[in-house]
Image (cartoon, rainbow over all chains, first blue to last red; front, side, top):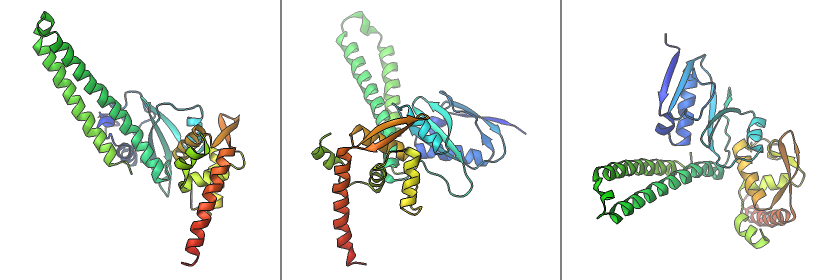
Length: 179
Length: 105
């Protein structure tokens, strides 16, 4: 029997924080676990076969954590799994009631909105890049720089695709902000 | 933050914010607040780590509470003068609510 499996792009597939948590918990219940979350876990994550575990996972985007951020979670019995960029991942084993790190609707919403704003910032950067690229390209229309229409088109198609994906994700996070 | 601005931002406040401010009339760290609030509400409210961290950051940033000392990397906080004024305003508002529901029950 296989004792390892690799999940690709889990961090992108489950861009809604609550979905990523559920995904990790479902795997744990089926006996697939990770010891640590790494910078690139969102792209590729290897699970080891273990006993089935009842874990509660929590994903918390914190761009500017203070010194006591981790200590607060640890005092409440959360195990620090690691982070993907500013996405902190915590877990806690439990028996009866699934524990929560965000216990009122304001803080649940704030947790989601942190993700939403990061995606929105990314969107603005992507759109600004498209505008800058277009100005650069057509601004130099009569010079030789502009002969590379293929290069311009490929860059634009890539940027448009990334913008579409980011918009789709931020919309999904916003719609699910109460979860 | 001055009182007017704080009132606009905090009144009315969530139950979480209210109980955190109430707890910080005595200096406490995050976990201590959770225990105190659980006791006050007979186990009804069990504040989570994320909620406490978010709330303390917000209250501290707006000057309603202030850090006192740090024990084992855990910061303790206590309510400030402006925090106390906000707490009193909110308490009066709740008193008004209370008298409004008294006839109801």
